[in-house]
Length: 357
Image (cartoon, rainbow, N blue to C red; front, side, top):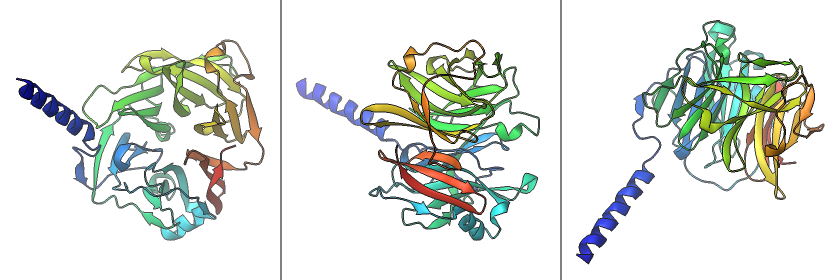
């Protein structure tokens, strides 16, 4: 009897281990990935790269096969946009770098690029390895899966904002952007591996102090998952630049959710990227902005700030501007001590790792 019980327990443990060990690529198709645009990027487990295709109104998961761990080093590539343009047979003014993402396993960097302008643009995914070699990710024959986004914007000016940011968290892909629903500002939580489900997303409302009103049509520009007082939140930044916390527990399909504005960082600005990190036992977030440069937010006590519910230009979470960080276009976490920075202007953009401040 004891042996029978022991056998049953061992069998159960083995089955559980098999379930846990199932790779993230299970159930993917093999073939050509049809993307109309290449935008926000995010990595999930097992080298899976998520690509936001705003014009195609979909999120595509791609098996990069890039799962060999290497020791971390540094990156310093001058004129990365000119190098990319030359590789694609065009000039730097005919490409736009849309996002960068670091593979947490291999530390190789993936870059989404649109080659050409307007309707003739083509989405391309590139890989920069730790030795500095650029190569194009072949999308003609690859393992992939896709999740279509319901109710995308129909206005041509808004279609490029169907997906403004992607993150992967605990078996889910978080997708921010615009929809064609009553509240255009939308935040979707899509289970991965992708499956047929109600992924209409949550409809987000927030108070914008610089504008002095509640808003439902402004998209989240960038966000990070963040834990505050043992509760999971989304910290979201919008144009002009409110910082809003949104409880993960309220993000249900079709739900109307009111975020809590805890900072206003000045009007006339668009946030680009956010990177949370810890240094010397203290919590910070770096935020790249179009007008205010890179700011360093002190986020040690986010549960103590009162909601901003009245007109205000600059208030809430304290921050400092990093004057040495010039023309930053994208920030991406690299390792525990450094961040990946894309900076510069067309024809003279650099990609390098920089020590966390």
